[in-house]
Length: 540
Image (tube, rainbow, N blue to C red; front, side, top):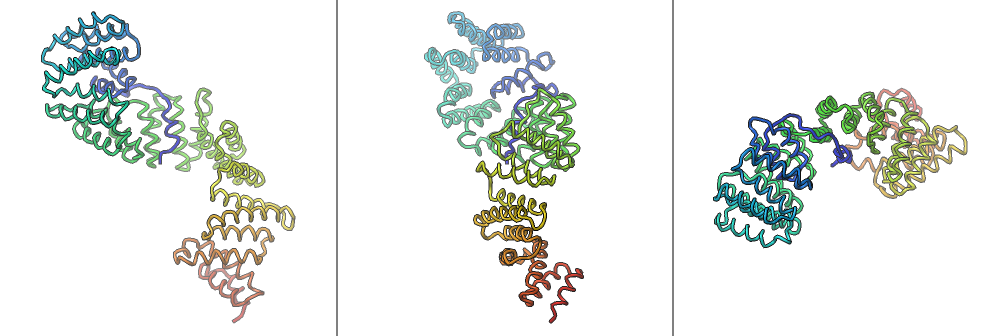
């Protein structure tokens, strides 16, 4: 089940790498379309001894270009040329900027410089085609096709960069064909002993919409080939998550967390997944780790409330809730109110819980299910009239299930028992309960539990004195339960109640029946002296 809170959990948060790893992770994330992640990694690793600055500056410039910052792009491409004048991609970047500025002549000059750095590198020819495509795929279609054809011819149709660009050109309109082109790029690279991470990820991202199983299999293959790649780890974790494979996603995120180039928002998702996997202690550990760095992180207080409530540590859940609710900038969602209200209600702080739930309803009038939760809080507080009133508001929205109708009957049963015996008000409340339980019986006529509830309501109506209607309800319950011998153990308390009450009901009407029911009752409660005395009084 994909819990609704998870999407809210990931609406925002600090984007900062937990530690610095290689610049290649930045390159990989750029190629996967994760520009914000790529930029952070590339900037944080630019001065690392192992960083190829010419490469990093090229990708930083490309990010600026995609974001419309042409001056920033040119500055980074110039830095790349200064770092290594033999790396042709920065000249292509400068050409792309010139082309975007309307200076095609200057652009062609930069492209020539790029190709001159390595005349045998057909990937550079394909990247010139990409530069034209990035600026205007319609206006420069002739130039795009010319360079692609040259790259194909010079490489004898083995240049993977050609197939990558062609896949990108088809991705939006024909994902199936695009995935096929990416697969060709993978295989052409593989033939040269190269793992084309970009092609793997683009294949998965494109084909996931068509056939998620095959997309995931391709990423699993990439992880086998590149077990230390942050991109490979994260992409597989994401696809597991998007395909509702939360257990696999949780395990994969755990591996990814060990990579130095993971991000805080990844830790947030991991904490949420751990919760959904019922790994509450581990989820709390990750949430506290994030809060140590980012003490105002509303998402992690939300995770703490979820975990603490699940562990029935309501004081801990309340503490997390107070932290969240004390932050005026926090973007609180309806589930926050429910979790906080639940924590308060389970500690007997009903007045506070009611205020929180009522605020949740005020802020979320389109979420009638909150009325259901508030009704349960009122019932727990013994405020039976409020419980009934609120549950009725909920059912009047048309959102109720059969179980909700049953709960409404129970609310009326509770209200009836809270009223003085012998009063019209008590009888009226019980009658309303019968009305709702009969609605449930119409929906699930072979469910013994609804007949037990009906018997309880009728008992309350008759001031705890067994009646003919009550007897009929309990006998129907026993008939349905007896269809499965395992129910005697499963519903032992229901059998005890029915047997005892039916024994009393039939005491003056049918001694044989009364004796049968009391005897059966004693099989569940053999030490009940009152029942033994009742049985003795019935005689042989």
